[in-house]
Structure formats: C-alpha cells, structure tokens
Length: 164
Image (cartoon, rainbow, N blue to C red; front, side, top):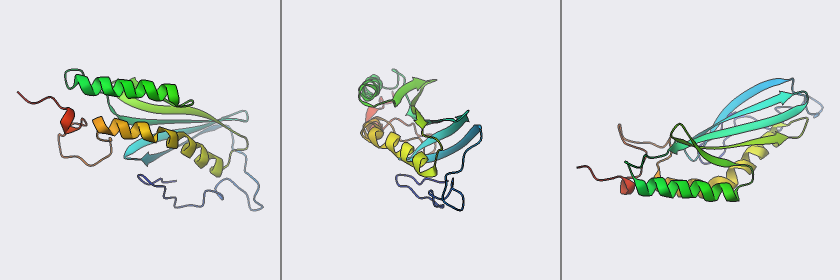
C-alpha cells in the first residue's frame, strides 16, 4: 500500500484487500502488520496489532527536529506552544518531543473484523485534524522529507540565528 505525498495514491483497491470472493471480511490472525506512508513530506509508520480479536492501529510520524534554544529560542518557544495547543485540541492524537524530534502519534482501536476501508478511514480521521498544526509547524521547520540542499538545517531561514 503506497500513499502519495500530500494526496493519496493507492495502487490497489482498498475494498478488496481484506475480503474473500463473496465479499465477506477476512479475519486477521493474531500478530502484527506494518506499513508506512507519507503525508505533507512527513513519513508516518503504522502498525496494526491483532491480539485475541482486539485490533489496534498505532500511527507515528516524525514531524522534524525540535531546535535547541541556542539555534533559535523563538522557534523553540513557538513549536512548544503549537504542540501544547494541538494536544489540548486533538482527540487522542499527541505531539510530543522524544530524543530531540517532534513526533505525532495516536493509538486507534479498530472494529473487528478489520477491513482495509476501516484502516484507511482511521488513518484519514487521524491525519485531517492535525493538518492546521502541521502547517503551523512548517512555518518554523522544513518537513523532514522535503527537498533540501546538502547540509541545510530543517529550521526555516527566517528563524535561524545569524552567523557570527
């Protein structure tokens, strides 16, 4: 399954992926299935975990680096505020900083038996409400998968401290 940058480009029919010839949903065996996709030049990794009939979708995206205060106190403060407001507003999705990276994630419980349509719908329902916050973050940071010149920092030029 491949999702395109910004838009969705599926090379398969999502409605037929987890169905048998008569159209009934196929049960998933216990275990884990992983996939990844890009949205707005951000890579998201997803894992579907099936355990005794319970189905959980965990999605996490690496939004970019949290700049150090030495790089830009204003950018760090602005990004911290965006994360805080997003976490107050978003239902279940969270922006957090881990190991110097801003991560966006959510755990989603899917109905059983899971279908490809339900899976894609859950991803879209997670992503769409985060779009305004991702756009605000891009005021400070270039998205991780966006084209950049060699050695260029992710911090947008207007927020970089001038060289001495």
